[in-house]
Image (cartoon, rainbow, N blue to C red):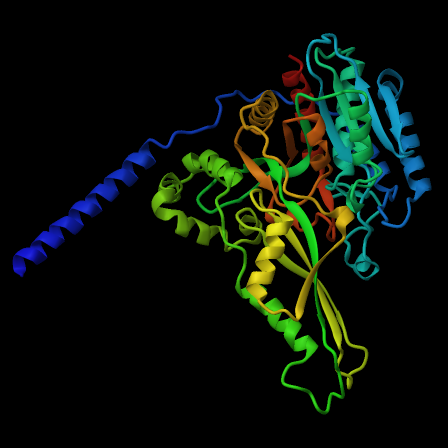
Length: 490
């Protein structure tokens, strides 16, 4: 018996030593995927760009699902045409559905495939109840404390202005790109992009125009992004999640008086279904996009985090549990479930027969809206809870995954390291939706990246209260686009 115990102890120690050795070898050999690029001297950007961004922020180009505020978009385009005269006079302009714009900057070499820089001109509305909580009025364009305040300074009028300001700077220098450049700015991204981005893509298809790469808004440079990673993390979105909204509905034959409630009510049944979904989230999954992210950030992390990323075969469960602690990182590894609307009941003493809940799902690549519906029916497992689709016009499946070794990604990676030399650059999954999802018919490589550096508090300002961008961030954004055009003109 003692011999057996000694044998088992030796076997255990041998296995432990082998595992330890593998962990150490994998960690030591975990090589960096960061490219060796020297920082460049950023171009000097005039303070006039600050005033122009302030001016367009004052123009409330708000998206409405029912109509277009024509006066606001006309005012915006009129202002841009007059404020940026070289862009207006030299670049070829095409108007799509009155308010979306395409600009073409002809390159010298027609054999090079063009690329596209895109953004959207519309902004989300501001709740009346929250307006008093803004430090500065949401459409004031106030320049204060080294920030420009207002809707659109982060999402996404700032990108459109940054691209056009860069073009104006280069045109003043009589710059001619080798590769043709297109700019495309939709006017209804916040309500689905039907008359903006989708119509723009149709135009490109009709003209048989395809792109080497497309760059849209999406991920950013995040400070203190992940525990164990000290440098800022520049996330270049190579894919985005799908978007699906479903309604859970309970219809009972009888309601009745609240003084005689049955064992189960419509509200109780629906509440149980919602609680079941909350207790049983979609499984965490290390998808292709997550794996590529890990491969790029893992080697740059401090111990022991580096060892965990280098040995997912052993520590995958630990890594998933760490990502689940933060809402943004949790959303990168699973399809998320977000109940947003509950409806039912007409009076406090009447039991309703019909109640419903609206739930928004953001779907990771590898899953679909159909698999989401299947998961709900299986998890809730109650025939009284009916699942149906709503908001079909806004729905989308997860995008294709773009290459992290293409010409476009390499240009973005190089430019990011030149302008933000301290950052770690990594491909990532965009957890929100963008207009770029419609561009798959005209480009195999679509990237989602806004070159601004923000902290976690700043992220709450997007679609939220006190949206703003620092003057330094905005000038750096223009310097980034300038350098990107230099790096893409080959």
